[in-house]
Amino acid sequence: MSVRVRFAPSPTGYLHVGGLRTALYNYLFAKKYNGKLILRIEDTDRSRLVENAMENLIESLEWAGLHFDESPVDEGAYGPYIQSQRLEIYKNHASILIESGHAYYAFDTPEEIDNMRKRLQESNADSKYDRMNMSNQFTLGDDKTKEYLIQDKPYVIRLKIPDELIEFNDIIRGKVVVHGKEIDDQVLLKSDGFPTYHLANVVDDHLMEITHVIRGEEWLPSTPKHIILYNYFGWQIPQFAHLPLLLNKDKSKLSKRQGDVAVEDYKSKGYFRDAFINFIALLGWNPSADKEIYTIDELIESFNLEKVNKSGAVFDMVKLDWMNAHYLRNIESVNILAVQLNEILIKNNIEPTKFNQDYLEKVILLFRERVTFIHEIPSLATYMFSDPNEFDEEYKLKYWKENTGELISELKTDLSNLNNFDHAIVHDEVMKFVESKGIKLKDIIHPIRLIITGRSQGAGMFETMEVLGKDVCLKRFESFINKIN
RNA sequence: GGCCCCAUAGUGUAACGGUUAGCACACGACCCUUUCAAGGUCGGGGAACGAGUUCAAAUCUCGUUGGGGUCACCA
Image 1: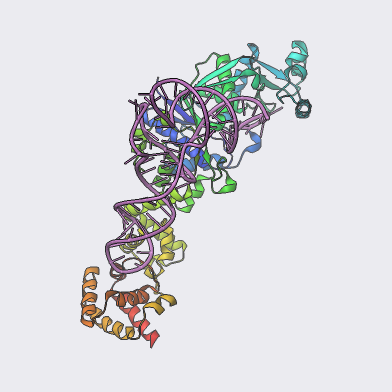
Image 2 (image 1 turned 45 degrees about the vertical axis):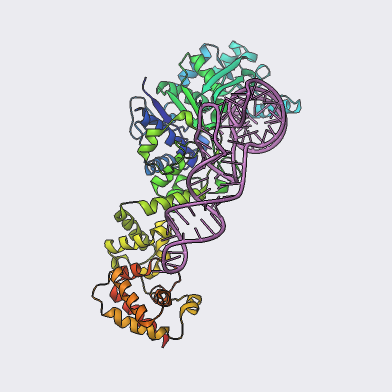
């Protein structure tokens, strides 16, 4: 049987990075085994619906480069792929369970349920649904139940949990055993006619012929309920793999309170897709001991569910940044970066028309190993886009000596005679000058840096001068000398 | 609290039951050098604890401790 896996988020606003990791692992698994990846929207909670959430989810998944073989926007043979459009299916399946006596009607109001919980807590009992003391098919009898149904009394359908040991195997965790008496008579069909997650996910996974359920560890405790459902329906149980959670610094489940959790946040912060995916992939799984950088194809090639870790992984922002910086300085298509830089310049109100693609590429080459994000370049390299109007006083104090002004004037004349401003040529010229004056390179190079950039830090001086060009450099020499005098 | 899951440096992780417990990020030092980076070299730092099995345990078993998840007409 060919592999079919799914990512089944609920549209509550945005794609969580933990969700992305789950989606990624599903994707890697599907690709690795030539299977199909399905996107299913679990929108059975009407109270939590968020406008455009599905579009948002899909947009983030697309940004991440995850392609789905079947989804609400590209349906396959197992649709619909949005649960709110499958209500009849769930209703029918709930009826099947009623018929077979594995589920039952219950008419308790929310208040009655609340009171029951309070009552049970006070007597120190588990606050599970008290099947034999509430208003349901068992306590009412079939006739009364039928009467209530005819009267349109609001009802839910509950799962009758058997009093037995429930076992299942998890690919990552091995055998898990829970006793039925620990499990609540879970609601399957809500009074608004919508299914709960438990019913909907089992029915859909079966109907959509899902072979492997790869999801977050938070589902582990409710998996026994799902096993019971599969058994009641007489269906084959898929393989389960419960992924370790992504954690905050304090080891609690990754949450909004302690930083960004939406994929779109990372996108807008300027992380590269490939770097982000690379980083996320290695949270909870690692294919080898001495390699950190993987292409998506390499990830697919080496993916192995059995090697996924059991324990949660802290989302380490510092390493993410390192990885992004690593991608930035190794990416080969600098032309694409230049296009991005151009957009950033526009946002920063720097007149981009003044700088052509070629110039921007050179600037990137000069600064990429000094930043984590491209968008840091404009502020780091202001002097590549306009003449400096501020000069580091401390730097000047340190390197601007009594005779520096004269030296600079003379050097300017020498440089103005060059008709090739290649960095190697400028370098030779400056070295010649240094030797003829009997000084050291650092006696002059820092004053040059001050004049050209206004700052004490930056890229290689001669390379910087080459990119700026002879005219700009000489102009800056000139205006600085004038300013001094 | 009940139930379930988990436990290798600060973080992410590697290692047929036999390794001086490896790698990466972070941290420190040094090298390179024209500043800042990048890069390179070196370094500090780790098996939660206790029993047991075994010639041999990070690795298998049990217990303790610690952490997390989950206990809805939410997913």
